[in-house]
Length: 157
Image (spheres, rainbow, N blue to C red):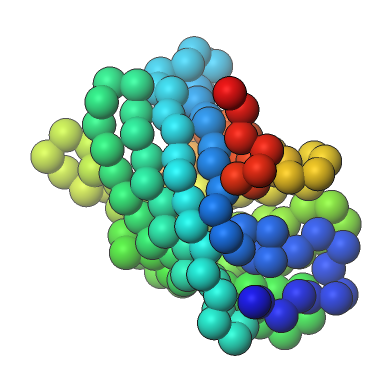
């Protein structure tokens, strides 16, 4: 079990330990839904590190996988790295929310393009976290991703 960060009112890393399910949408910069997806996740802790494996299924049938290694830092800080990271992601805990800034290479057609993500994860009740992620390139907002995370025992029918 991951040691809880007792200085953070909402500890995202501890919350993600075990099995988690998610549903989400990607909206373009005009607010039009462009993609829908589901995610099955499994977080395994080892000391101050959480290994989070994500399996995405998109509405067009595309499948993607990503593994994050999230490491608890000092105070309310944490870092992360994924298979497609451009650099180490920087995170911090705040009152009822966790923030993560990351740069990932996304497959778009036959190319992999680096995109910046600013994530906010909100504790929204027992077994529920809401995530808003703003995606940008060269400082220009390209869209927003909205995701609802549920613990395994809270899965919707």
